[in-house]
Image (cartoon, rainbow, N blue to C red; front, side):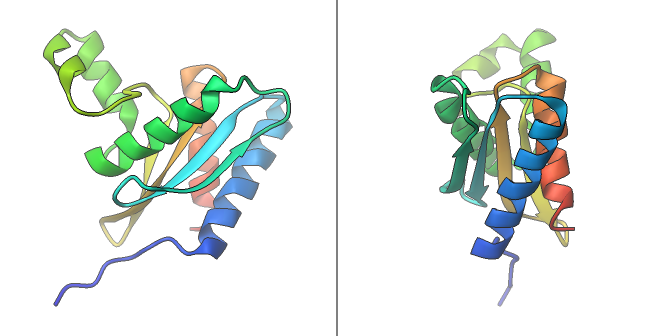
Length: 133
């Protein structure tokens, strides 16, 4: 039988807290979403003043990163580099800002961030993941 890592509630809260700290340190208004390895939402935090639609975008970025097993930036680059057929893939929010949480070479979950520039969304997501090692 195989075993696999999974995010705990403690992990989810640590991710959300670290992401919020990173965003606030830079003056960024974002929404942070954390999903399990199947893309199911485990936690969501929209900072005060952040546009409401970012909640859906962040959740979908997290879902896409978990289900796709890679950063959503990879999908965005594929589309931008001419693989436009990938737009019809059954994933949404194929935009930078979704990052899988990898533990022992397995996806344990993911983080999606929305609200600022693509590289800033990624910065917040990666800072959040670093908080849990």
